[in-house]
Image (cartoon, rainbow, N blue to C red; front, side):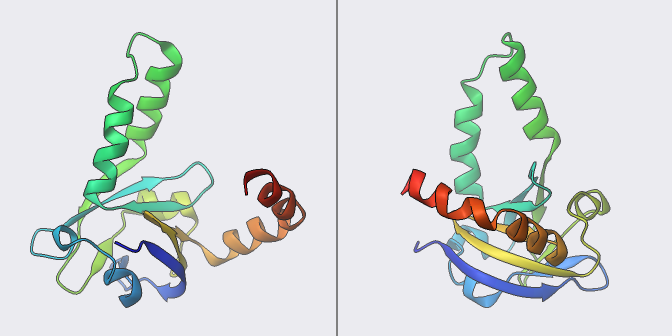
Length: 148
């Protein structure tokens, strides 16, 4: 898999479903494109919604499994992550349904921006993404220097 790369603008349909852009659908694993395919949705702390294929989520789940339920911080992290998680079916047309809870979390009414971020897709309300980029434009170059 080459990974999800790029940015697309889309609109939810009247039932709150997002059509996964063709360029991202091409990158989905075969297990994520057949009948009964699922995708994991997570309410991210930054106000976006992250979409993970099952094989990617399984790797994250293994990382969470080693955290101790007897360590209060580790238990809190697990609780917060699992509270923000859902698994939904991708229909034959490549649409992903979002619950009202997820849409409200992200401030999404109809229009969205989908960012391909290698192993995941990130869904934003356009206004929130624009604000995030604008407020952090000056930090971008220093972050890039620090991590690259």
